[in-house]
Length: 369
Image (cartoon, rainbow, N blue to C red; front, top):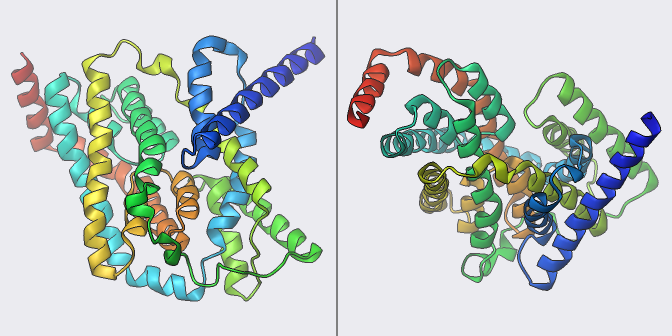
């Protein structure tokens, strides 16, 4: 009986991989940017209608795929890039706070339009990690987890599909090749010892990160481990392209299955509002990128990807594909994730208990009546 279940899981796993690979091939032939991620995501999103419970892609495979991506994001973190990140720390704080304030304004308008609970929409519009925000939605009193899931998933879909198309459009990507991190071109060659060292450090970093409950541990742990080796003078060669492509396909396949259509069926106005809220956050990051570009004299493409309301893994892959600065993108995305993880939950609990917020909720309820 156990062997039969294991065999069925293997068949479902193979079927899922084939669909994801076909999506990658189709998007590649159509010359759609970031086809390793977007192709499998779109194919699995569409196939989930047809195959229902037959598709299977465990989180463990996605986690393994994040480790080489984490290595790629940690490799450009040199002493010079850390100094640049420290110099931009006040800007990182300002950008994050402004993004959160803007999401609150959008939430208020959406709640008024859809007649949804204000605190549910506020939690759903915060551009944090999907899993962390879903857990937070379940923990906060008076918050509807279904609403949070809907808004977070729609934001993620907008980021996964829209941001790469915008960032890799000819208008923004033109001349971006010069924006890559210094020292990335023509790097050192792999040796057996170097490969074993980085394999051990990145895997250990992922496991320790998981033990310490770091956000996106299988990505952040390898980033920290790789960066530590680079900072002490260990060369970090480029990963072989096929290995990185497979890692990104595992990510795209996972995203495609996570974005379940059943979570957004029959929502009507609410679904439209969640789409508009996600697009508003992307538009805000596009406008904010002009300010970041002028303040720190960095390319607009790098600034836009650094401020985009996505996950560090997706934005890191996009930065690499678009030849943007991995160090700056990773720094901004990492800061926002940690800020939202540690500061936002107690801040929301305090906000929801304030008298003026309750009055705002009462006023909106009266308006709906």
